[in-house]
Amino acid sequence: MKEQIVISKATIDRLPLYFRTLRLAGEEGIDIISSEELGKRLGITPEQIRKDLASFGQFGKKGVGYYVAELKRNVGEILGLDNNWNIAVIGIGHLGAALSNYQNFTSLGFNLVALFDKNPEVIGKVSSGVKVEDIEDLERVIKERNVHIGIIAVPRTFAQGVADKLVAAGVKGIWNFAPIKIKVPDSMHIVNEDLSVGLSSLSYHITRK
Amino acid sequence: MKEQIVISKATIDRLPLYFRTLRLAGEEGIDIISSEELGKRLGITPEQIRKDLASFGQFGKKGVGYYVAELKRNVGEILGLDNNWNIAVIGIGHLGAALSNYQNFTSLGFNLVALFDKNPEVIGKVSSGVKVEDIEDLERVIKERNVHIGIIAVPRTFAQGVADKLVAAGVKGIWNFAPIKIKVPDSMHIVNEDLSVGLSSLSYHITRK
DNA sequence: TAGATTGTTAATCGATTAACAATC
DNA sequence: TAGATTGTTAATCGATTAACAATC
Image 1: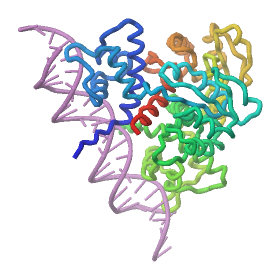
Image 2 (image 1 turned 135 degrees about the horizontal axis):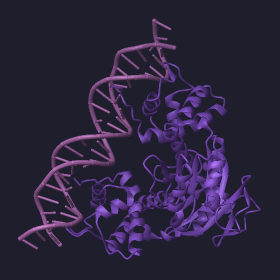
Image 3 (image 1 turned 45 degrees about the vertical axis):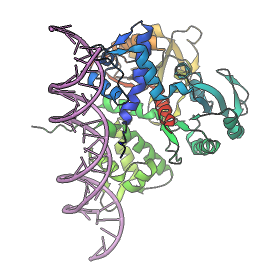
């Protein structure tokens, strides 16, 4: 019986932080880094970092540390960033426009290939070098441009409808910014980014000071 | 010896979801809701919801359920949303502009009272009814307008400097969108909103399909 | 009363921390 | 070799799930 290794969500959510810190360290000219130093930069214990990394393989050298360039490449591959996923943003309001301009996505290897809106005044405009398409053409354009990830930035009431279209068009994953629980088939991956959670939890903590 | 009850971070992060769902249920005209129904709407088990709520008090009626309006008010108070915190956004680029326009914050009871940027072309412009101030005046304006929460939306390299100024000006909490670990005194509350984590973890999952 | 549903305790599950052998 | 640091196992801690008495 083959052992099924399940990686915890917490571990996966830390990998992007490791990736970014490794990139910064590389830019600083650092060749080798210890879990101690990585931990110091991230506010994470060295034990935690070693455990996280060890669940994917042996990337370090005992008594030495981790080779920055090599570990960065490995973590990038684990995250699948080398797949250069094609992404599309649906809903080019303030948030959608901000997301389509977000430099960090490009620097992580994601390609913005399509934008959609239903407002005629927005359709046809260019943002981040990509022309805004009519949301009516979503399915066709998504297929033509081989979009892997759809980013939902429409108002709450339209989010489920957009998600359904994205699923029908065959995207592999959805990143949802609308404050609503979206229903998708079990096979579809969806990440909910609920901005009001962070602000509310901050409110909770400062209330108790 | 007084028992010190610590509420888990996971519980606190679910409270805003309860709050929103209760508000929506109220708008639908629902007066009483069970943990079963709440759970169905949120994709959370009823047991989890009852446990979360019970850690703050007895809000329900056995055999009946929860009164929507009452529970919503209670959860809002727990989160401190009734404090009507004053918020300010620093860095009015695409993301900062989107955040200052985000309707959900207003509807949660937060007041946008100040915007800051260092670009002379942006200073003086009005966004969401608030004039953009010179970041040089940050400390003075923050104090004058009694800003409780500072939202950092500047590029990574400037984020620590802005955070230091916010701390000096006496804000109670910081909501940070810059992709960097910011150092603040232990007494300061900070929530890091790292947008690339969500997208990267989506990449991880679709890579393994 | 009978049925429904909460609040709470106990059991389980999962994640983090501690410790240390392996080894560069 | 001696010192440093990883990878891994064991111990602890914390969060979720299950079960059920209390009670509306």
